Amino acid sequence: MSEVIEPGLELLERQNRFVSEHLRRIFVQVYRIVGNVADAQDLTQEAFIKALQHQEQLKDEQKAAHWLSRIATNTAIDFLRRSSRASFCEIDEAPESQTESPEQALLRSEHREYLNDGLRLLTPRERAALLLRDVEGLPAEEVARRLDCSKATVRSHIANARAKFRRYVENRKR
Image (tube, rainbow, N blue to C red; front, side, top):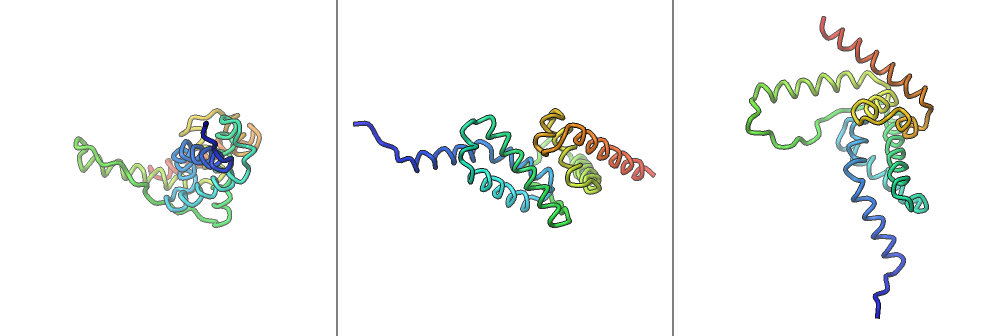
C-alpha cells in the first residue's frame, strides 16, 4: 500500500522549501535597502507572508523567485516611505580572521560607516536601484522589473544616486 500524503501537508512542505531556499537572499536584499538588521528581519517575514498568501504564483520556481524579490524590494521601499527614516546598524559580522590587524579592522569599519553615510543621502528608490544594479550586479531590465518601473527610470535613479554619492565623496575630501 502506497503512502497517501494529505494535500495540506504537501502544500506546507512546498512552502517550507520555498522559504528555506530564498530566505537568506531576500534578507540580504532587504537589509541592503533598509540598512537595519531588525527591520530587515521583520520586512523579510512580511514579504514571505505576502508571497505565501498567493499560492498560485509559486508554481513556476523561476517566476516565484523573481516575484518574491519584487515583493521584498517594494516592501522595503514602502517601509522607508512610511517611517520616513532609515536607521543603520551593523549586521553581525563573521568572526575576524587571525590575519587581520587591529588597524585593518578599524579601516574596514570606517569604510563601512563612510559608505553607509553616503547611502543615507539617497532616496529609497535610488538606494534600491543602485544596490540592485551595482552591488547585486543585476541588469537594468531586471532592476526595472523588481522596482516596477521603466528601464529609463532605473537609469535615472542610478544616475542621480551616483551623482549624489560623488558629491558626498568630494565634500568629504575637503
